[in-house]
Amino acid sequence: MQFIETRGNNGHNPQRVSFSDAILSPSASFGGLYVPQNIPKVNQPFLEKHLKSHYKTLALDFLQAFKIDIEEEVLKAALDRYDGFDDSTNPVPLSKIEKDCFVAELYHGPTRAFKDMALQPFGYILSKVAEQRGEEYLIMAATSGDTGPATLETFKNQKGVKVACLYPDGGTSDVQKLQMVTEDASNLKVIGVKGNFDDTQNALKALLASEDFKEELQERGIKLSAANSVNFGRIIFQIIYHIHLYLELVRKEEITLGDKVYLVVPSGNFGNALGAYYAKKAGLPIEKILISSNVNNILTDWIKTGSYDLTTRTLVQTESPAMDILKSSNIERILFDKFGDTRTKELMELLESEGRFTLGESELALLREDFDASFSDDEECNAVIGKYAKNNYIMDPHTATCMRAYETLREKPLMTIVYSTAEWTKFSPAVAKALGAEVPHDTDALDWVKKHANVTVPAMISGLFSKPIIHTVVVEKESIKREMLNFL
Ligand SMILES: *Cc1c(COP(=O)(O)O)cnc(C)c1O
Image (cartoon, rainbow, N blue to C red; front, side, top):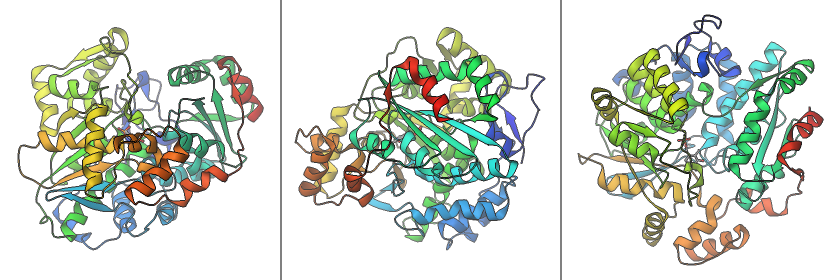
């Protein structure tokens, strides 16, 4: 399988690259992204063959159908990362919350957010490829929450990769911060930045663009890569769980093989939703992918009206911060798949120059064949959390945004999978609030919810509060570069 570029080729870069090249250097010509030339079939015979497969068996077969340039032993070892999840035979349990609705819990990995589903195996593969090539990569991440912990966790003590993670000091939850600053490995660096997430992200972008920083890296023989969802190496693992969950519904006799289902995906950078889209394109019987957002509902507007408009918006902080995003990177891959590279380049350039673009009527109709969308504000999410808590199911605020899409967007009475992207323990003050108590600090809120809702807190969360703090550096933006070079 070869990978091509969403904005076409600039005449200098190769026209096509291998999977390993695409994951090591994920940015393509004209600022575009890499996409596979095609997607292997997930047809009836494939699904029948895997009716009794464990997660890893299905995953290996799907990855091999992709014919990527990664040896079987490496793929197998990468998938063995799922052994660290709560249940290695079924890393993504389903919970029935309505007669025709299941929650797919994508958060049973080491950092209790769905980022682990892809980052765990991806991190192993990336560092193996770097090691095999005898190269050294630096991955820099700015995080407001879940990406930082999951990135550090997957690369800790891995060869060929160093990770530097910047977080806004005071801009993450206690649990998220502790997950980062207690990570103890010599290839990891965590830096607190004075300012908010935007300041942190802008500081990172400035550093990545700076010529003398690049020169310094070159002198040290270090290359830059990225582990955010622009990297296709993450997306490939986000196709698999949609297939597995469909088969789970068949195994539970909730549907018959071939029946269509709705998927409801809480979206930020559209990686999870893109995985669902590729699964549908590959042949998985999906009626529609319903996109849910919080009040930063630029995706709702885009899918409803065809207009993607940054100029009328400012980012609002919500109780579902992983979805507080306005520039959603993976919609570019949808544009490419539907309209081709010339049009994608045109639309993405409009977004950069004018801050907006609008699809034509027929383009919008094509988009709406696969997607519909809605959003919920914090108040609505609190009500949803409260409602399901009464039925003894505790969900986090990101998951709660999905229930409005489930209730209002389905046109047919089909079985529905709602994706739960974080365990409640990562957002315990918000969950406590939804259950009626103001408990601002994570330690107290975890206890309060635990007692009140009769749920457990996993050891990797409760243990954080007594772990030694390794990374104590908090700096002004101007000092990030110096800290980085010290680390390298
Ligand atoms: C990252 C994240 C999302 C958004 O996922 P995308 O793939 O970026 O759309 C939603 N919820 C949680 C809890 C997350 O960490």
